[in-house]
Image (cartoon, rainbow, N blue to C red):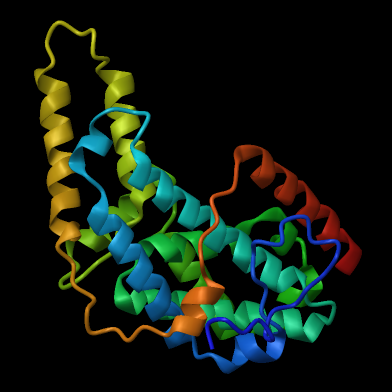
Length: 256
């Protein structure tokens, strides 16, 4: 099944064919729970491979780069899957499906893919589709608002930090939270400071948090090879990401 591509749309005007876009029927046939589980399996595996040395100094190491690439790929996959639908009803149904995936990710405590998908739904090409969003149920919109508030950047991710401090069991944190912390620590306490004690104490706190979550075990989740194939990561360059973002906005304007 993993080698079969019948469920992917192929459009000549897609500037980056490495993103596999499922036809609407296939995408909707796969349950949100399965998508969430497949995303979590990969996210947890990548997060578990991050060596602490990669986080000690910006710029970060290769596995951190791999995690960033995964985040960008899932975000772009979400945007493209919605925009590929010329039918407003299909677009709203797909948005609803993604919101259900986010809810399942929340249940699995995978905050990294949650952030990737919510970032996609908050992006300009998707947010401007007012007619499409008007077809999404009020209950789902409310759930979306609640989850968006949970992952809000406000007050240095205060809501997410408080939520994660109470989490029990396996968890995949949003890696950007730690990267933001480390960059902030180095900005406030550069290496040329005479006294490095404050920086080292703050870094130790961040590293301890990473170690706690690297022990998360999701081995009970079943791997679906065809879905993993659909979600395979491609590491886009900054130039490619910028080009896709511009293209997505132009594309969105042709829909509504």
